[in-house]
Structures are given as C-alpha cells and as structure tokens.
Length: 73
Image (cartoon, one colour):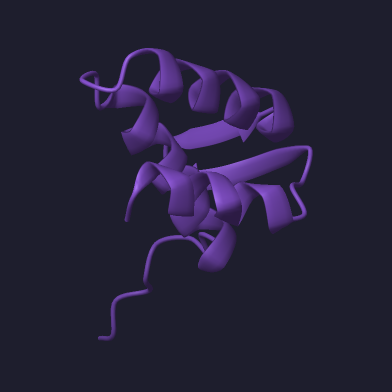
C-alpha cells in the first residue's frame, strides 16, 4: 500500500477514541496518533516506523481484535 493510499484510507475512516490493536496494545487518542504518524511518515519517508504503526491501526479498524482463540479440547 502506498503512502497516499494509506492517507486516503484515514481521510475517509471514522476513528474511535480508543482502539484495541492486539492483545497487548491499546491505542488511545486514535485520531491524534493517526495525525502524528501521517506527519512523521511524510517528513521522514525513509523511516518505516510511522507507516508500520498506521498499518497496524488500519488492520485493527478493518478487523477488530476479539481476544485469543479458545482452544478446542
């Protein structure tokens, strides 16, 4: 996914106040985090950390974390 596609995704998304990304990570102030990471991604295109964080937020929005799978006995 290109940077522009990622930015376009967030421009049209409804962002919750908090978002559970995975078992150990809850993102507070999702809108602020997205804005900061987009800014960092645009200012430092060689640094992939901001894009990685945005991709994790995007994936959590598309497929919300529902907890660990219950093992079948």
